[in-house]
Image 1 (cartoon, rainbow over the protein chains, first blue to last red):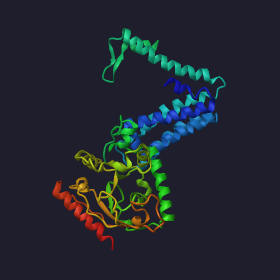
Image 2 (cartoon, rainbow over the protein chains, first blue to last red):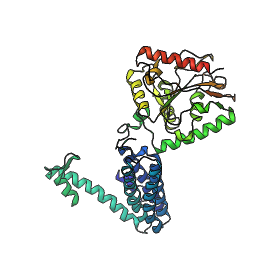
Image 3 (cartoon, helix red, strand yellow):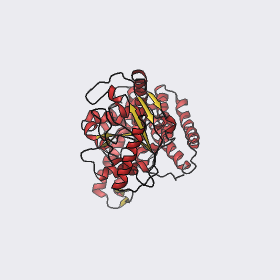
Image 4 (cartoon, helix red, strand yellow):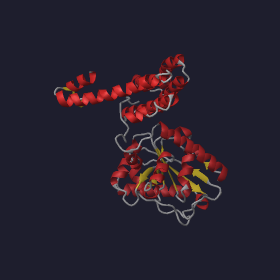
Length: 168
Length: 237
């Protein structure tokens, strides 16, 4: 997976921003399918449009627009969800839409925005490498020192030793 | 009004190939967009090449679930029935297609699912489980099926007897069945041709029928099939 993520970073900033945009949409798609949010088609469209707008803001190097997108998306989600005229579950639907956009649109969008820096390559590659090493250390220290489970109902394989190794 | 619940996609965990062949396949945003594009393309084609005429639009329900059935003469039939439905139903319309025709090769199954949004039914090994799964999916409330109860395309233009499998989907339920009569599709694209002729095609949409009082057993299914066959034949005039 890491080589695949590093692939768009090396050719250039535009490829990095595009790669981050595509990754954001794919990640959002997985969350939408895992939670059933994809069935809320109009809200899904708003989240995807927000991700596309974030990608354009990064590509155009417009920081003001980048930070303006989240409140716009939140307001649109809240408004469009009202139009469905289904008050039951309104808060859950809007909250899930907001969480999806903030995680995969706005947060990931910052990685794309970083590509506007002339020295973006080492920064982004360092982020990818740090995440990979975090996983590797978590696995190794968990195997060597991990006995006490961290959250057995949520993630049965994770141990306290592994979590500390990841922190280091 | 139902409480909103976190309910993962029914086809989660399946590989791409398994998803295409599964009756649990659900339609996401990208599939809804391709369905809309397909609808626009086919409507333009049918209007220009086949001068499609639709009568009885007022008989179409305003929201799903419902089942559209018609006489079957051509591969154009599902295209015509899908194209005549309003755009707001795009992504909710599922033609039930012969698995042995459309889902054996990878390329045809990709086309059938990505563009036509078809669900497979295996004519030779159509088990109870498949029909029950289709029924459960229909009763969940958001789907529209396009079905051809004859089971295969006519080879001589005459309509054959309806098979009772359709009855199994709707017996004892409030789901309306809309009988339709297609004319001109046999002349345009019969089973012996691979490219269509530019003949006029028309659809007559009949009054919806429901079978909530019919028993969900063999006798009930056969009576439903017989009534629907009669309804479709009556639309010929």
